[in-house]
Image (cartoon, rainbow, N blue to C red; front, side, top):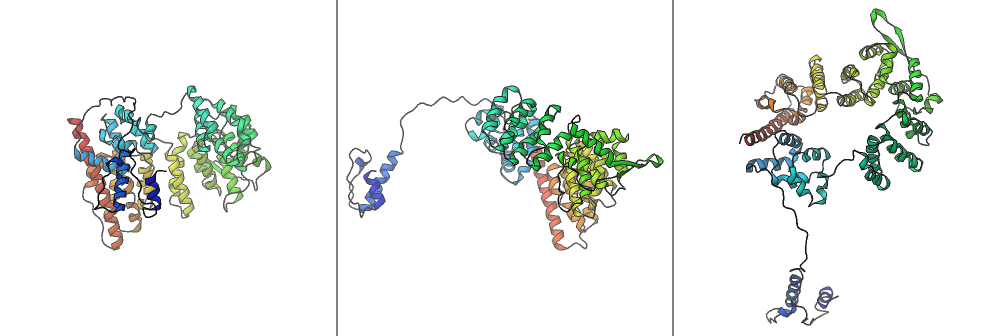
Length: 523
């Protein structure tokens, strides 16, 4: 420890008169000044030493940096740059996917000044879109910040990538190992099964379940033996999952056992006027053979055993079986069971089976049923319906989904009772022009003619429309809104006006962006 540091630590009063160090270049600059106190002289001396120590460093060689690649030079306006920064750095970030789509669609380079801001974004969905618009300049820039390495990271997709997956499998966290196993199952399902078999019994129960879930990818008859062994696992959650996976392998013995149970569960009661009528005959209690095939023993919550067993069995039987067994289409099956006491449990099971292996001809009747359930008096049924509608939406194309929602709105005596914010949230942005125009027509009509709470709740969907409404609908969205004021509480009217104002402000913002892009395209 040098003398100046000692004096600074203990105080100049206890450690006075530190001698000048002639070997220190900074000390040689010290000149006695009687106008300064000893403390001031000491602080100046420390300051000179500190400045000297930080003034430079030994010359060292550094590798040369390749110059940034040339990119197309577009003179973006200062206003547009400010607009882009506002999108990236504020609560308007929800508009960024649209912005990136426009750049990609028109093959316009992102302004280079925005590249660091874009590369700093950590949202994985946004990163996928960002990769397509930052160009060679963005790739060049990413090498200078380790946190930007995601730009050049690639997903394993061939046998050549298996060694890197194996390293993650051996050394990674459980979530990382799950992702590696799922990816390996896509590349080489047999090797993935081998990896898990070798360590399965050594893993914790919760980890065994998480890892086994990855077998849904690349599932085949080759997995049956391992999954049959897993049915005897110590963990009930692992056993349930193994049984569910086995039921998805059509040729497995487990799937065959569930089909045989299905024949006993649903039976034809009549076929009057060419209409099928089905009756459900669920067991009174869980038998040992059902439990051995992974059906959980205890129903969740306060649910009845027979209703629970009905849903579990139907969910584990392929949809094709029911059509072939009864020789009818899905809509006839659903209509045929509607009047049964266990109809809701049967249709819930069919919906769960659809989520595992979608069948296009089941979408419409299932969507129609769950749409009707959004009007059910019990809130738990309404919540279940909204959840299933969201899952069903993932299995159909956008055009078909939009038509289904429009038909649902138009078929309702009072569309305001629909959970419209939930329904339109299922439709990917941007909406089609036809869907956007119909949404605006109904919304404007409700706001102008009614003042009840249902309409107030409907207005909440404007938050979603703000982002999803296509540019073809901007003019209609920005035309003056008429709000029914008679009989509306002041707080409700103020909130409705605020929501509409925020909606139009955001649409105006989006319109400015599109105009600027159009100007650049035409230059």
